[in-house]
Length: 111
Image (cartoon, rainbow, N blue to C red; front, side):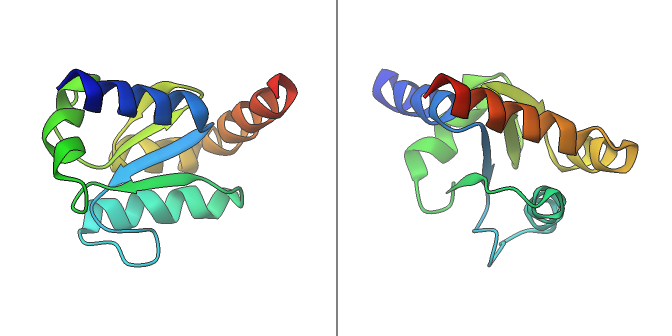
């Protein structure tokens, strides 16, 4: 289990924005994942994704990583933001875009 948690930690730290979802942004496999990916796409910046259905280890262990039981899970700047409802709320309030742009700028400045 430690190996998969280390892998998740590395993915979260290496990508300014990452979504763990059922399916892919192009072919989501559930409504929540679809809505969350669409919200991220609306910002217009690239983001990483992991299809948890294609990686059973991550599917089983991700809920333990941040103590969040459901999918999708969206991480921005290394922190769990939440699931689809929270991301949609942030998008509606106009807070998602600045969060993402700041995380991407911070990552670029560090490299």
